[in-house]
Image (cartoon, rainbow, N blue to C red; front, side, top):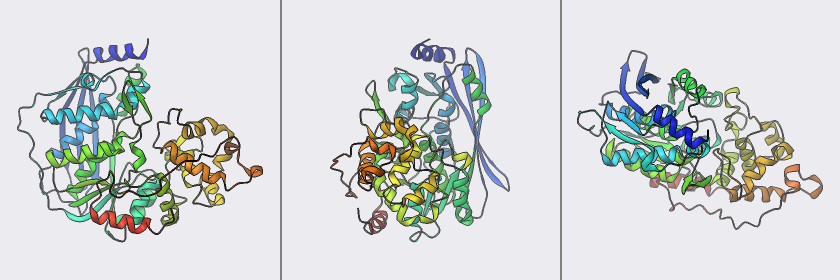
Length: 453
């Protein structure tokens, strides 16, 4: 069975997805959000139950009506279950969306599932993918008004980028809050250093039922996870009365991996400036004016961030982790695109002996990585579906590193590599595509100007 035919048969068999309800629960220890979804499979209903929870503390205030933002978190979270069969009918029973909102979520689902669509060989347009409708007769949600304070929440994933944001902003914002969802060991190490300013959120998917559908031949694949983080972080901003949600997405997140049926397939779509702009507009128009979402590192590319990390985040060299494969074991697997890309970005700014200790080897001297090396450095290859930078960034770093060796000492991946004469612009365009408030631009510029790019 060809994948496209399988896709058509699955969405015909399971032709209706239902967002049944959301629930907000409080007790003396925690706040929990519970979501109920259904997939209608030829009359057989499967219920999915999804939960988010955070511990209560003195900094949290619940003196506002939060139904609006919680409903929207449910819309973002639903994609993990919707993608099982990708039915065209998406019925909302616990809220309503107007035409503009439906179009907004249709765009998010289509582009956010772009990698999923490509890898499953699906041929579908945005208009064909999903139709949102509501059976809820309640009035539309009113916008939330909360008096927020001039502080920041930084989502922490364990990688170098969010650590750069934190290190550059901690002096200006000594009460900065750090938020991590189901934190890996690397994230926990960071949160442990600042227990009074840490937000740890537990996210529980209905995994057993998802896996059961996968075993029966239903679809699986990448989702726009950063869009989920976005809606949750707005909720946290309201709970903690904090004005700024500070992301750590760089300019190269805007580059697609491949163009497929006219669609730009970008693994990092929900980290792109396009999504950021759309999300900011949506939140301001339909949710709240009091929490602002932007990426602090947007004016920079991976080369800038690598040098900033090497300069200002030395204490995190042996604790940060970006590898998705090894993150749960708190290690760099040393075999995936993310490991190799991160090594390449840092290889000009951290001493070889230190870098080899971090990654447990010289990754440029591992001949088994030749295919990954080519995929990262050759523009005619499909860029790996990971959070990696552009071909120009990779080749700039490799060409610079190449010059540090003699011909006799070149590691194996550089022996047959031809250095590129790239007209690479290391100038930081602070007035380009970004949403940084002026005070944040000044902080970023002050730190960047300390470096010799």
